[in-house]
Length: 139
Image 1: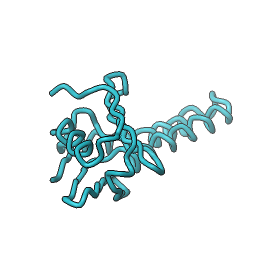
Image 2: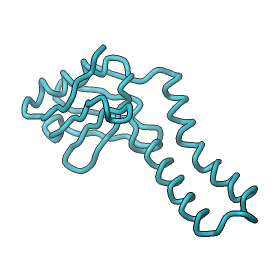
Image 3: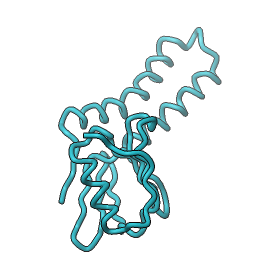
C-alpha cells in the first residue's frame, strides 16, 4: 500500500529546501559590507544543513509491501528497509509537525499531515509489535 503527501505539501517541502540557500546568497550579495564573514559562514552552514534535511530526510512517499518491506522516497533519495529494523516512532504532537521513524541506521521524517499517516503507523506496528510508539495521530 502506498502513502504519500499532497501536491501542495510537495511544493512546501521543495520550497523549504530551496529557500535557505537563496537567503544566504541574498545575504552575501546585499549584506556583505555590514555582516562579519563568520556570521555569513555560520548562516551558510545552517542553510546547507536545512536544505540537506528537506532534500534527503523528509519523506514524500511511503510504501509497505506484503513482505514487511518499507520503501520511502524523498526529493533526492530513496530508502528501503524492513519493518523489523524500525524500533521507535515518535508521533508526539510536540515533534514540530513531523512523525519521526527511527531505525537501525538513521531517522526518517514524515509530515504529520500526510494522508493516512495513522494507518501507515498501524501497518508498520502490525509487522513489528515491539516498536515503541510515542504519542498518537488524531485524524
